[in-house]
Length: 99
Image (cartoon, rainbow, N blue to C red):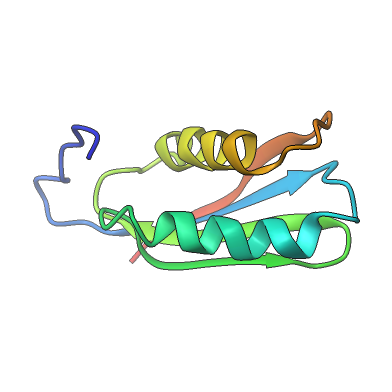
């Protein structure tokens, strides 16, 4: 597990990320693979990853990532490791909400 520091105030965050540029031929399978991969990362909770036909959408909750950058790094790693077919995509933070 990466060294993460929990928010000392006990805050939690719901982060939503979008990955554009995923080849449609691998989008659905990528969503399944990423959900499975994040199941091995217990520091992220309530993880959902879906393919909407155009982009991968990842949602997760944690207690340390107030700007979504840590989740974005892990999402990028999971995509790179799981997609054999290279592509020129882009990941961005759609929202970060304090719970």
